[in-house]
Amino acid sequence: MELPENLNVANYFLYDRLSEGRGDRTALIVDCAGDCAGDGTARRFTYADMAARADRFARVFVELGIEPEQRVLIAARDGEDFVAAFFGALKIGAAVVMVNPDVSQREASYFCRYTRAKVVVACPEAATRFAGVDDAPLLRRVIAVGDTSEVAPDDGRLCRYADLAPEDVEAAGGQVEAFSTHKDDPAIWLFSGGTTGEPKAVVQTHGSFVNTTVLYGQNVLGMTDGDVTLSVPKLYFGYATGSNLLFPMSVGATSILFPERVTAERLFELIDRHRPTVLINVPTMVGKMLASDNAHDADLSSLRVATSAGEALPEALFRRFKDTWGVELLDGLGTAEMWHVFISNRPGDVRPGTLGKAVPGFDVRVCNDDGIPVADGETGWLWVRGKSRALGYFQQHDKSCHAFRGDWYISGDMVRRDAEGVFTYCGRGDDMLKVGGKWLAPKEVEGCLVRHPAVEECAVVGVTDAAGLVKPYAFVRSPEPVDSLGETLKTWVRDQLEPYKAPRVVVFLDQFPRTHLGKIDRGALRKDAAALGGSQ
Image 1: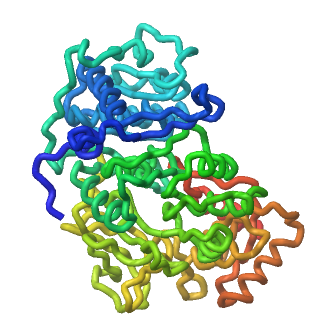
Image 2: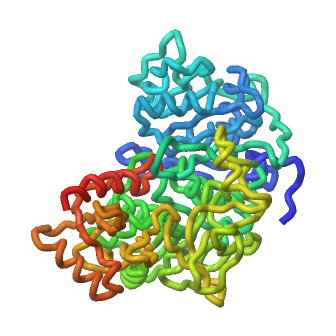
Image 3: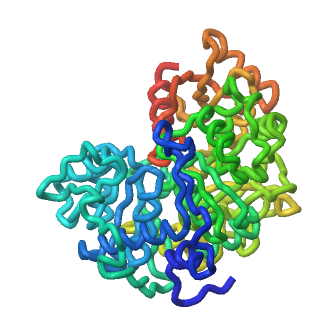
């Protein structure tokens, strides 16, 4: 698709709805557990409401001296303040940086130094941490949003949004004019989901967000103004930024937001209460929903489509989800570097256990180490090109040169494509294991393990033994006693796959280590496996 040269995503996703006459449509439903309106319903905000709120944030940012391309960091809970700050910053041409509001003090310091953000908008607990950073000389203000009743403003950085924001935009001098950004200007910094080292920022453009919204959100998911979306991942995760904010807002639909961490029971409650038509999900929560005591009482009949991304969806989970609720899960693959999903199954056309086909508008290839396409059925590196390609990694020139080659982005994922153009995910290149001279895809073993009724969640990594040979180790979370379960699971895999793919060691965990994006931290597991390797 052709994009206009001058393009500001705040206009495209929010303010254009007003010029279309949709200002009175509901943009957001914000459902806070135990904090709903007196009539028993959650708070609702129209597109006109959100435009006014975004303008108030834009006015605050301008008065604080924020200029185009400077960074505004958002570490807020999902809700109207997150969305208003997001669009207010984008409207004035600033670049938005989104991070997990549950940052530690060390992480707050890192993000401030790395992004050089001049303003942070954060929930009270995160605001306190950011205000305590002592090695970020460019940081001017930390603005606390949400319930700030216990926030004590200081004479330095920390302040409450309510003390800064004008009650009425017109009284404060009128709306802030949208900056005339170019389609290739930086819009949002997204942190890639790597499991080793500090997170690196992918600098994405205004054009990328519009391109994928049309190609995937509208053309594949079929978003219309009658949709109501609900997401398990939070807005700071690019998968949710698109599916539960930008995609619905591009067509005048409604997004359901809630600030707290989700549980299966809370998800069932929200679905029952607000009857969403689109559910944005991840495999871990799919498993938790199916394991819930309330699973068979849950009514998901309002859903016309449900998606899964972030991690590969095991075929067993797909089938159990569909058998339980009659809803297909559309597994897909996307990256921060290409902003969002570019391979996906389609509504009514799902191949369980696969990623589906390339989203029209993206060119996806499977290549060998030399960048030469391999034959159908062979495993290789995923190469993709399209108009959602990022500018690069901030302060990571070498990594940018390796990952971005001309029009192409090389993802580091290994996939396989069949003669019909359907892709199957094999794993990250650095996760693939060479066992006994043969390639082993951890995802294949994980898919086998999760089919066992005693396995709720699992991950397989490789460890090099004393002889220099790589062996697969399985980490498993199970509600059942584990006395003899390890040997049972080894036999289970051996009986269903080739014997060399069976884990040599099974380690049971109460909880998995997670990355800043909530994914299983395979780097941490590899360290644990290596430590165990010496004792096996």
